Length: 127
Image 1 (cartoon, helix red, strand yellow):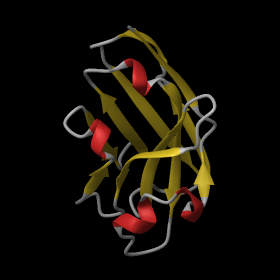
Image 2 (cartoon, one colour; image 1 turned 60 degrees about the vertical axis):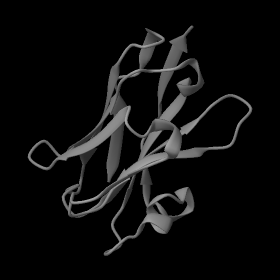
Image 3 (cartoon, helix red, strand yellow; image 1 turned 120 degrees about the vertical axis):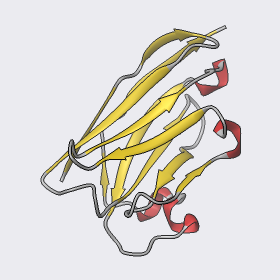
Image 4 (cartoon, helix red, strand yellow; image 1 turned 135 degrees about the vertical axis):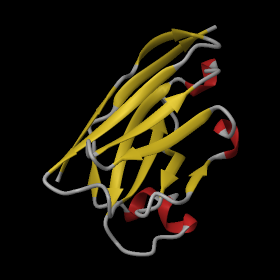
């Protein structure tokens, strides 16, 4: 399985970006998919995740109401729509896939459990 993350860039505070994570080699329709981010000098942080069924999404508190995670099974792609961006959202963003069944929040929010990772896409938010 290969994951290709894209969509990062430079944006002013208050702006929007949409990150994409395209998968090849296996369908995302049965995968728990997550987004994590890592700012310089900081540990990797959970941002958002969606269960394999697509029925439930989870977000870290700092992005709730601003970020939306969705899955397009037909395109085998997961999207992270990021609105009202803040300078503290600046980081490298990574997508990941976990094909274990019946994943719950504690598993989806833990980067150690993911099977496959994308290469990361840089997001820079200027003030």
